[in-house]
Image (cartoon, rainbow, N blue to C red; front, side):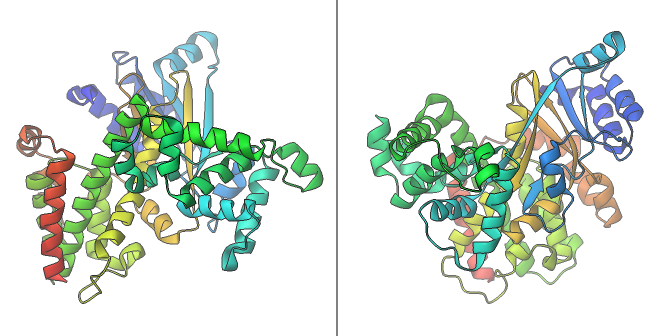
Length: 431
């Protein structure tokens, strides 16, 4: 992000991280001095009374048992940009649009398919019926883009070799995936107003129309020029997360030392093998080293655990780690005249725990370059300092360490595959 080289940008983020009211947020934004017109910000403010979330989803964000996971820790979201502040000053009001969506994971997509086909859902039947009733009664926005992203791992070889036409590509896809995609099209066509009157979920699309839409949507998402470019970046990032995750577990199971020694070893690995500072993942790693029970998604991986299908399990967890990053991509790629609020919909409590380990206060992004920086609720530098890891965080955030990371060759899918294989081999020996 080019703005990182400007001191006023860092000052703005630091002040936004502690802002709790509209005056303090506006004061923080003013530090940019009007020099960065493409920057936008969404920030949660404890003392901001106006709630900008759509009324239909407020009741879900306030329920701690809800299956809906917001990106931001609070619903009191304030929007910032140079244009907004200009309009507020000279017009006394700022008009802007914002949108939201509820992202389905693979399990939710599969359950919807079974409901559409009239199949039972076993122990999750009542839970899923209640969720679907809420979605339709409140006419909530939802999408299955993350489901498509999650399934890149199963489709990658098909994309690379057979992307000449939508129908040929479709026929090569897994049968279950095709069924899910068609059912999702049928589900999204249900008339919510009619459902509220009759409680009868009748799709507006015919089955053939849903197939046609599923065929074209899948092809455009996976095989178009823009789709391929986005997916290449996401796949490389997920591979990076997998490499980080493998090392994190290897460090934890191979040593009985204190968390400070473990995070130091993990920092050194990030510095010499990954070459990218990822704040969220490093905070989560330290919380895992300090108290593994805080990350129940990893409870099956420990000294002496079964090694069969271990890499597949780790790969799936690395895809789960992608959820907040994908939310950020949606925020940054929204039309420049709009703001976007993403939510994640899942029955996976482990994923919910993972996302809650790094509560987000806000984010600042460039609407032109689409680069985004999250602003955590708890300052990460302060977090590591209070955990007794001041020397370690100062090391990895030093100018010298940053320069070394910048000089490292950029990983390709091939180079990172070799790193993953090498690190996984060491992990298996440690377990």
